[in-house]
Length: 172
Ligand SMILES: [Zn+2]
Image 1: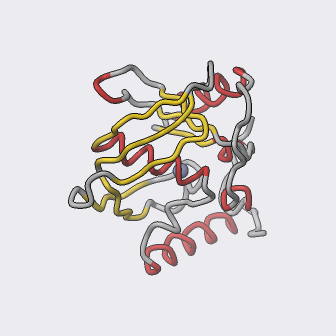
Image 2: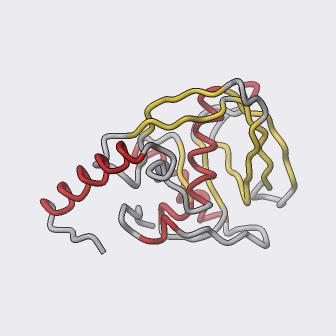
């Protein structure tokens, strides 16, 4: 398993839904990667797999221990008055310097667990809500570049192109 980085087109594709209990080694590999790089979350298409699985490496709602593994997750805003703009970084956009993203800090998340494919519905708040939106967006083919202003997107893309050029990696 290897991290997929901007401008890999897999990051802009919607992942397919998982139909049956996923191979547990996929999940344990994703958890070890996110631990190794010290990230707060990881979506399957960030490691080259276009399937609806993400892991979030912070405590879940009501203090449940992380990492939280979500299969085919989706989210809905619960409180439109509870919006906040904050800087986000992304493991797949390491040279962007981060961009500001406006998120709802109270959301409902529906997902299946990876062991039994049972349906769960949770309410996530604050930082957990932000991280979950970031990861679930990934599975829809949406990165923080699509969630920020045109100005910040242009600056981030310029920074990344420069760095990739320096490293001898050409944009596809
Ligand atoms: Zn990301």
